Length: 133
Image (cartoon, rainbow, N blue to C red; front, side):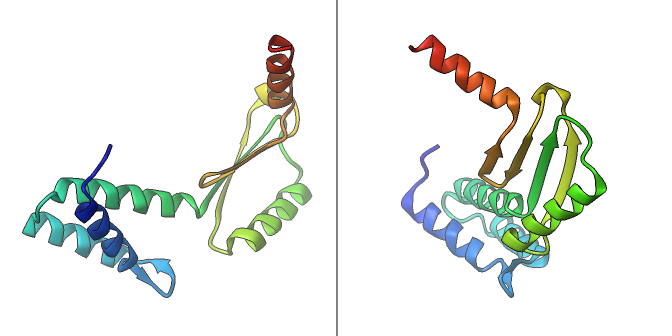
């Protein structure tokens, strides 16, 4: 959805003002939303939509989803947790899921970063290569 330049600038300014010590501040987010709804500036719906998207993307940067074909050992879980938290920060929340359809390997998603070393992904890539050969 294309939004007016003024709305995009306003949304970005509100988003940048929603941080305390480089971390998203819930109280500031609530205050921004309340002020926007109360004042209803021009294009406030577009501003709110863009602001919501920015907040969602920021929150996703601090959530990891790790999928594996079989349950990981305690040692592997701890090592993977340490590695991911050293790269993305100590406040990274990690969720582990077992998905047998992966057949083997791991799929890790953090925000817009995705690492897929699963057998399922490799087979899909091979199939695509054979179809287009």
